[in-house]
View 1 (tube, rainbow, N blue to C red):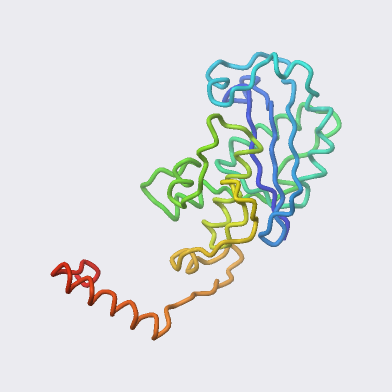
View 2: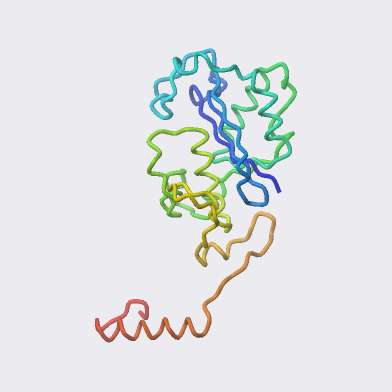
Length: 236
C-alpha cells in the first residue's frame, strides 16, 4: 500500500478568491513505513500573499519571486501522487486548492484529485477518535507525545513529516519518524490502547496483554505502595 502524507501552504484561505498554493510538501509511506522519498517545492503564485498567511508560514513574495510556477511542477507533482492514498489533515482545504491549480494549468487541466488518488482525512479520523477535544496538529502531537518544539512556523514538508508520525501512531502503527533528531528511524512500541485500534483495512491489530508473572509483579508493587502510603489509588 502506497500512501503520500501531504500538506500545502497558500497565499490565503480560499481559492475561489484567487488564492494560490505556494508550497507543497509530501512524504511517502509504503506498507506503513517511510521510504525516504519525498516531494517538496516552493511555487511563485504570481499574486500577493495575505499578511495573515505570512504570519502562519513565514513565506514572503520576495522569497518566492524566483521560484517556479505551478505549471512548471504540475506534471512531476501528479506523477508523485498518482495512484496513492493521500493522507491529509483537513483534506478539503488542500484538495480544494490542488483541484483549483489543476483546473488552471493546461497540462493537467482535466485532472482532479479524487480521480487519481484516494484521500484519507486525518482530521475526520481524529474527531471520531477524540470527540469534543482539540484535534489540530499541535494538539495531536501533544496527545501522542510527539516532539514538535522545533516548529515555530508552519511549513508544508515539516508538517507532512509530523503528520506522518501522528498518523502512524493514531492508527495503531509504529512510530517511524524520529522528529527529536535521535538518529534512529526504528519503530517504537506504542501503548496497549493504540494496539487495540482497528486499521482502516479492517484488520484486527495485535493486542499484547500482560503475562501472569507481570501481573503478579504489578500486584506486589501495589502492595508496597499501599503499605508505605496507607492507600493505593490503583486499587480504588
